[in-house]
Amino acid sequence: MFFGVYVIYAILISLFPYLLDEDSWLPSGTDLLILTGLAFPALLVAGFVSLKLAARILVPINSLAESARRIADGDLTARATPGDHSLGETAHLVADFNIMAQKLQDMADNVAFWNAAIAHELRTPLTILKGRLQGVADGLFPVDEKLIDGLIVQTEGLTRLVNDLRVVTLADAGRLDLQIEPIDLAAEIRKVADVVAPSLQQAGFSLELALVDMTVPADAVRLRQVLLALLNNAQRYARPGRIEVFTLASGNEAVIRVEDSGPGLPPNFDKRAFEPFTRADDSRSRLYGGSGLGLSIVRAIAEAHGGQASCRNSSRGGAVFEISLPRAT
Image (tube, rainbow, N blue to C red; front, side, top):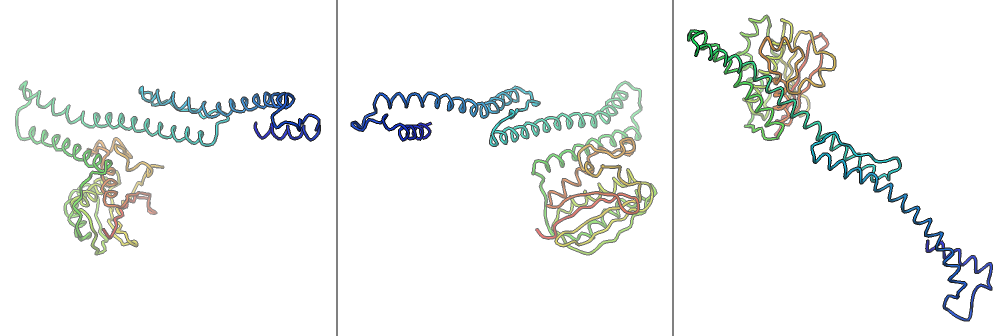
C-alpha cells in the first residue's frame, strides 16, 4: 500500500505540477486529499487480500484444531480438511496430521484385533480344561492317566501360546533379549533336524539337509526356535513329501532356506504371511494345533538378530521360507 501510494502520488505530481506547493515542506491540503483518496482504496484492497490469505491459513488450522479435539475425545476417525485453496505449508501440515491420525486408528484396530484373537486362542483350551475339571469334580470322569495326559497337553498348549505371545510382543517393543555368541549354524540345524525327523517321517515327510559350514553370531536357542517353527509350519500346511533345508552364504549374510513340495502359498499370502494370527488354511492349522504365531516368531527373531524373513513360491510348486542373518556382529 505504501509503495503504491507513493508511486501514484509521484505520477500525479509529475502530470499536474501545480498541485505541488514548493513554498513549504509540509503536506498541503491538496496533498493530504490526494493521499487520503489513494490510501482508502489501497486499504480496501489490502484488507480484501488479507482476509483471503487469512482464510487460506485459518480454515485448515481450525479444521486441525477441531479434529484434534475429536481425537482427544476418542473419535479416531476424525480427519482435517485442507480446504480448496490452502497454502502449501498448511496443506502439508494437514496431510501429516491425517497420516498420524490414520496410524493411531490402525494401532487401535490392531489392539482390538489382538485382544479378540488372543481371547479366541485361549478360549478353546480353557474351555476344555474347565470341562474336564468340572467333570472330575462332579464324578463324571475317572481320574486316570489318560485324563491327566489330556490336561497336560492342554496346559502345554496354553504355555506355548503365552510364550509365543511374549516373544512377539517383546520383539515389537524392541525388548527381546538375545544371547549372541558365535555358533556353528550347520550343527544347530542338525540338532533340530534330529528332534523333528521322526515326527516328520510319521507324517509322510522326508527331511533333506544341504548345509554349508559357517559360523554366525546368533542366539542358538532362538535360532533353533526359528527352524522348529518353519518345519512345523511345513508339516502343517504342505503335502507329504520332501522338505529341504539349505544354508548358503550371500555376501555378508547367512541364509537359511526351508522348501517344501507344495501346494505353495495362496495368492498374495506372502505379503501377510508373517503377521500375527495369520493362517493360510485355518481349518488345517486348527487340526494340527496351530495358533497363527509361528511365522510371526520367525520374523521377530530374525529381525532381532538384524536380519529378515521372507517367503515365496518355488519353481517346483512348493513354498520357500528364507531367513537371512548377518555374518558379523
